[in-house]
Length: 133
Image (cartoon, rainbow, N blue to C red; front, side, top):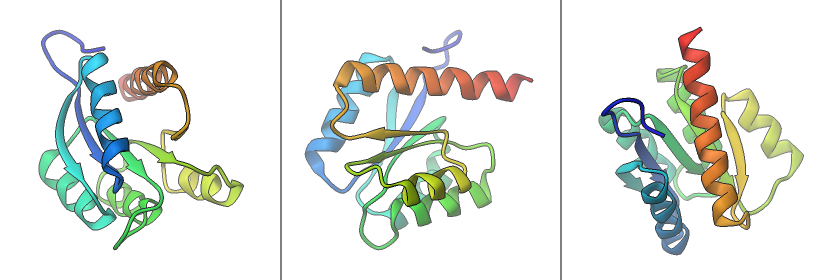
């Protein structure tokens, strides 16, 4: 997962504590370091700007700013940000908006943990490969 001695830095933005804890466990499994945790969209944007994570896991339905609003603000300031949207519902409107605003991937919360690990790892590898082009 990590190239050389660099550890993948992750920001988790999720208002549900049990989901945040599950994503933290996934981060540990793939060798990532959780550098910040947010419980609402505004906090996610602010922490992103301070922590400069390599990858951000962003819930769509959060208070203050939605995940889509936070994604738009993060990508406005950092167009090369690697953001994976996390949601319990995959309605096509949300998926289209997430892609439009620059999401690198979209994961349903009920996805098995090993599949979440794989999706995060593959998304990061694809993101790095695109940056190297």
